[in-house]
Image (spheres, rainbow, N blue to C red):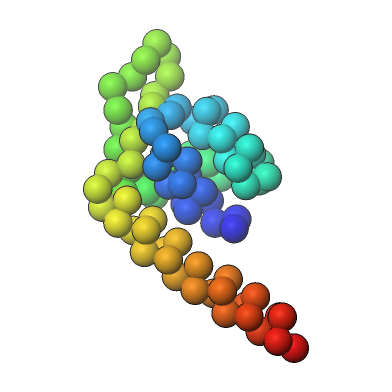
Length: 95
């Protein structure tokens, strides 16, 4: 999975984080390193869609949190991906 928006939402599903913490988390669970432009572009689009929001800033860092709409969207997208994975694996093993 390399869709930056899904990766950011998946990271924020575990709790609020600032940009660098999101990048590190994604690197850890997905093995994907998002550059700052990709990360902050995804954050901007997700905010505009109401799927995440800025939380109260800490120090100079701006944390983000997933919204209820973001959780619903992530759940739907991951369920769809799960179906694709199941079907792909079934077809792979039956060939």
